[in-house]
Image (cartoon, rainbow, N blue to C red; front, side):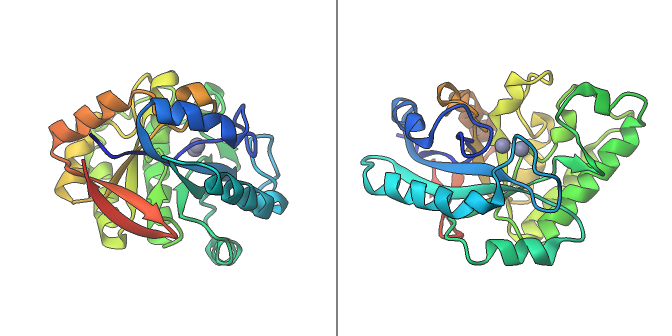
Amino acid sequence: MIYKTDYHMHSSFSDGRSVPEDYIAPALAAGLKEIGFSEHLTLFRELEHWNMDPANVFSYINHLENIRKSTNHLKIRTGLEVDFIEGKENEIRDFLAPLALDYVIGSVHYLGEKTVDFGPEFYEGKNIDNLFESYFNLVCKAVASGLFDIIGHCDLIRIYGYRPSFDPEPLYRKLAGIMKKHDVAFEVNTNGRNKPLADFYPDRRFLNIFHEENVPVCINSDAHMPARVGQYFDEAYDLLRYTGFTEMAVFEKRVRKMVPF
Ligand SMILES: [Zn+2]
Ligand SMILES: [Zn+2]
């Protein structure tokens, strides 16, 4: 029996369709042992419809605490998916410090003032090679900031299927090396399958690099509705096993443990 977790899920506290309670039955049906919510939280940008209002963060944490007490056979973890905003590292650290979280996913959605995942028009007329370089640079800075336990969809820049003209392998090598150095986990994010890309993040051709560097891994659905909890996980586990991974990262109170699978 594989010890399955899903730490990247969005409820109606940010841009998910349902309240957290609605994710429990599908999680049990999918054979998960732990789920964690990771609502979008973006500081130092205008509050967008997909974000949780930072003022609600304590009611979110309390809400999950109450569900945790009344849920059997499934551990409920409290996380956030926080945007990395370069130059605001100290302020983000100060915001997160007093919060009772099990983990923080750090994600790069913003490249400049715009997000890379809210429509293919972001890419039109831009130099795709430069976008890939800039995106990976920013993800490396997010890793090195020490703010995060897990990096979300580390190559989200692939979302609309644009590819660089060069072989991106060195970008993945550099990223994996920095993740190892700073002891940050990556996720196989299965939600890329529901996007124009139609594949997981990160690019499966480079999973072996994360394995060679011994970077801890999680498998996450990035579900925005209960029906997608644990989606495509059997395939993702097979992929990791085939690559040589034997352990998953689990988190409690921002401490990581490795569990064999
Ligand atoms: Zn995200
Ligand atoms: Zn997400």
